[in-house]
Image (tube, rainbow, N blue to C red):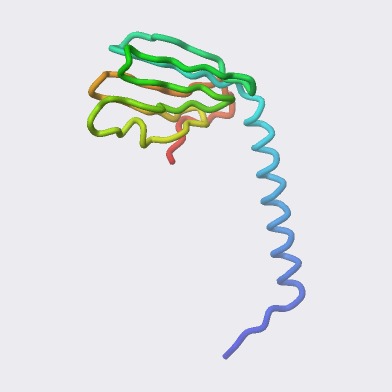
Amino acid sequence: MRSKMKWGDFVIIGAVLLLAGAMLAFFAAKASGDTLYAEVWQDDKLVERVELTDTTDRTIDLDGHNVIVLSGKTAVMQSADCPDQVCVRTGRLTRAGQVAVCLPHRVILKLTGTSTDGIDAIVS
């Protein structure tokens, strides 16, 4: 037995999609106002903490072992001379809570923020 969708079903689907779009726009606008920082740690010591803005353009070289590039509101471990390259393959970090770790050189690149939205962690 086949059931056919009625015009009321389309109205409900449209209302749900409209509500989802409004929520997405609200949360995206709220998140864009947060302050974002890139923290570079080596041997359990904070090497640098840089505020990421739309105009950020900076390269941090850690003794030739790791090269970190901060561009706009993103950070990436561009290169490392370690054999496994896990930190490089982590890719571009864009949100508070994301981390790239180079275990052989004990380097941590993490993004932190001043978000007050109550989110404890972001898992991707």
